[in-house]
Image (cartoon, rainbow, N blue to C red):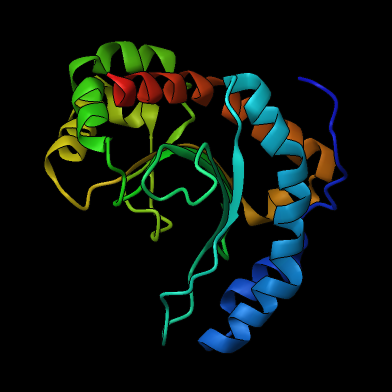
Length: 217
């Protein structure tokens, strides 16, 4: 586990309430004021932590939601990738929240350039993947939706189908990790939350290394 490098203040009910603020402008104001400073606190720990685990420099990207013009975001996050210019095209890690829960995940969203090859590997090796992933890991196929399925409920066949879709469908996504309900996150200390994310990202680091090796083939 390593020493926590920076102090994370922890989550409050007001942080989650920010994600229910009506209107794009007001919600973004609350996200910038309340949530993004906490993302920076987390990044001060996890950018070097991930770099040490993975053996490559990692870079922090706080979601700006710049493409939105009308509808406010239902979730917001900080991402970590090896590219200083962005994360959307690459395998990356995210920490973020909806109004209902927080999440710590790894994977590809719809713009990932190597996701077809990764999806094919997941499909071909779904039995090994199922054995490697913790049963309480969530599998998310749309990063804008709060919906997810647990690995233990998907089973080998379910993971294979997720991989096949990632390989075949242009807009397909696959993120894996853990979620935590709002009330539990609010009760948890900042240090305990950091430990929870570390425990989530540790097995996900093996997936990152696999994804990187596929991209370099």
